[in-house]
Figure 1 (cartoon, rainbow, N blue to C red):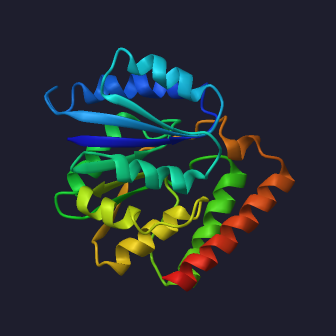
Figure 2 (tube, helix red, strand yellow; figure 1 turned 90 degrees about the horizontal axis):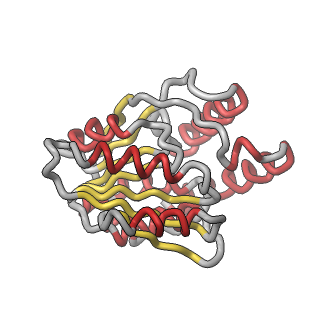
Amino acid sequence: MLSIVIPTFNEEKRILPTLEALTKFLGEFPRGRREYEILVVDDGSDATAEIVRGFSKNNRRVRLIRFARRIGKGAAVKRGLSAARGSEIVVYDADAAAPPSEIPKLVRALRAYDVAVGVRRESVGPLRRRLIRKAYNFLVRFLFGWRFRDTQCGFKALRAAAAKKIAGELRRGGYEFDVELLARARKHGFSIVEIPVEWRHVPGGPIDSASFSESLAAAARMIFGTVLVRLEA
């Protein structure tokens, strides 16, 4: 079975098209015979949960896990990884910035690797987001000595054994959880590969709607959390 884990926060405008696109594609991949499940982990947000519940009534493969209050994207992903029943688990953003047709790339990589990480083109997205991404990646390389090109891509795949082991140790609830996930994987000797993927910027996410001061505060929290991950690694 293939599991797709989708962490959500205030995605009522984008989750339905994503679920429709995923179920359509997964129903045909490969050859319409493979079992799959989609776990939407809602982080105490808007009407996202109600939309998912409505969709799941006609599709038993879609499951909802909902928190009453916000716990952070990292904690939501941890819960999804722990609850997933598939032998391969894909973490997938609610905006479907990577189209469903890119999923087989990461799944095929799991034949040889424990963890596959999507890599976006450097030119994708607004200038502010690209600059933040490059600056943060430089920080991660400096702190950890890694050569990963895109730790923050919201499109990753893990073998179940690796996912369960890593999920049991994840502590960070913020956006720095991506770095913690990779740090835990490396600590346990799991093999990791980066896979270039098609990616498009989909406006309307929490980062796009944040004010400058909110962005600075979020960046400070993320940097602090990343330093903690390094100290704990």
